[in-house]
Structures are given as structure tokens and as C-alpha cells.
Length: 441
Image (cartoon, rainbow, N blue to C red; front, side, top):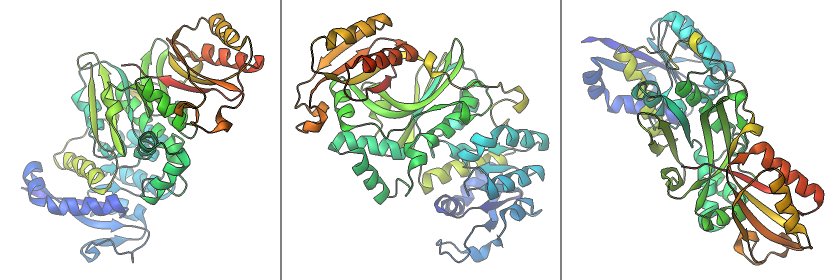
């Protein structure tokens, strides 16, 4: 049997500690499957004194992760620190430039520097593996890069942030406000003290940028993604969606269109009949539409120490077997540039919730503005003033207005927004309209 593969791990948080435990627990099986042992020999973290429940005396300690990355007695550098700049970026570059394979769970780093890091890995002839960077324990990276290589992919989309999915699930199930559910998510450790990165959609955008590159052969570019968060979603919207046969999920969507690849992150209404609508709580899911495999949905834990460590260990095992693939499925020089998303050209169905002025001519005026833009309506639902879809008995939600929900057939973003702007200018709408895109099956 070949000499053991010596691993250096930078970052001993939940994922780092779980990775060491999993490697220990599966040591014999991994050696048998990979043809060589895998041993952690060196580690680095910010606080050496912190109790992690690990026998740290077994490993050489490095205060500086860059020095660990360059250490000649380390075969593979595993980066689990996080962050798109600083120590994580410098250490990964140092490892690749020293000719060492790298395993990382850092989606922010890859979304910002993925192409450059892939170029460095290719130059050195080593692996840059990152299964754990998207959807935790769900093996979506290998699925796109390897299992579906014979397919032409039309769309990849999914629930990529457990915090948002937990909040939306709880809002729908218990009728609680966004703020109340966010506080509960923070109490349970699902949301950070500053939740902006999650609830604002930016975490999902970083992960979508990676999936887009693998699915469509494009350069990783998170700045090319249209991003909206879930902060404006209300219980009224969730109740209306339920009555209309939908659920609301924060989705990351990358779609092949006539004008190129469209990337977007936003709250989305999905039919209850779809597998992705059944995914609740902190669970993640990724759906793929391809030509040879028309419908494929992968569901599983998107975070957590054990689940993420499972993906990290899988990447290490590939290196132990001697596997080296282009990080994003094709050589970095062959990845196509990607223009920023132009949402005005997006075409699809829309959910529109309006508070319409209770005066003569308002309904006719709204219909006229829709017709001017060529927008056809699939359904029009007017609710009574005490409906749970419009605030129940809360008079502040409905005073002086008639609550109306519209579902449109396919139209463009430019047309629906133009029609709504005209309605506001006409004085037909007394509150800011709520607009949610519909993702069909």
C-alpha cells in the first residue's frame, strides 16, 4: 500500500472538527477504498486554547495558515476558515502555487476568485475540490461535473440556503412574521447575529455562481447575478400562495435562454406538486433540467458539521485515489465570460398582490394598464377585507383599499413593472405592490 496521504487542515470550527472525527472514524475503510491511508498531521486555527474535543497534541500546530499551506510535510491543504479574502485566500493560493492539492468549503472564495484559483491548480497539475461549498452534504458538484457530463443542461435551480428556507417554512406553518421567525432562527443557531448575507440572498448567489459555471461552462461571476432577499415576504403572500396552489421559496436559478445564461436569486412561487416545494426547514435541494435526464432533484442537509465534513472527506478521498479534474469541468481558459443578468428581459409568470383604491374606475384602469402591455391574466382574486391573505382583522392593512391578487401568464419583467408603475402614477394602488416571480415545472 502507498504511503499515507498527509492532510493539513486550516480552520477547526464545527466543520473542521467534524472532518477530523470522520477521518478517524472511517480510517480503515478509507484506506481500503483509496489504496492508501489518510492522516491529519497538521492544523491551524485562530485560537489554540479553545476546547474542540480533539486531541490537538497529535498534530503539528501552525499559527499562520499560509505557513501550513507551504509546509513540505503536508500533501493536501484543506481550507475550512471561510471568507473571500485575507488568510483563506492567501493560504489557498500558497498551497496551489506550492503544487499542493486543495480541498475547500469556501463558496465566497470560489465565487470571487474561482477562475484564478482554477488556473493556478491547472498550472500545478493538482486538484482543487469544493464539494462542500454548495449544499453541504448534497453531492451536487460531482453530479454536475461528472455524472451529467453527457447531458446538455437547460436549467439548474434550488434551495441553497437553509436559514431562508427555515424562516419561510415557519412563517407559512405558524402564521408568524418574518421578524419573529428570524429571531427564532437566530436563537436556534440557524441565522447569524447579522443575517444580511443569508436573508438578503447573497449566500445563495455565491453558491449559484459555482453551479452556473459547472452547468454551463461559464466563468464564476457572482456579480452577474440578480439578487433579491426574503425580507419583504409577508404571511399574506404565503397564505395567498397556499390558496393558489403554490409555496414560496428563495431560489437560485440559472437558465439557458436565447440571449444567454440568466442567473437570478429571489423569492419564487413554485407549484406544490413539484419536489422542491416539499423541501422544508433547513434542508437544501437542487433541481436539474437536462436533455438526457429531464428531471433530477437532489435533497439533503445543506449545512452542519457531519454533513459538510462528509463532502470534505469525499474530496480528500478523490485526491488519495489520484483523481485530478478541471475544477469547473473544463479548463479555466475555456470557460466563457458571462454578462450580468438583465432582469428586464426575464419572461415568466408573476404573482402580484395589490391594495387597490376603493373608488370608481380603479379596476377598469388596472385592466387597461395590463392590456396596454399585452399582459394576460390567468386569475384575478379579490378578497374580503378580513381575509387572512390581507391581514385578517388588522385594519391598517386594508383601510380604504380593496385587496386583489393577480396571477399572470408569461410576460416580461419590463412589461409587468411598467404596468405597475403606471397604476401607481394613476393613483389606483394605495400601497407598494408585491411582485413575486413564478417558476413553473
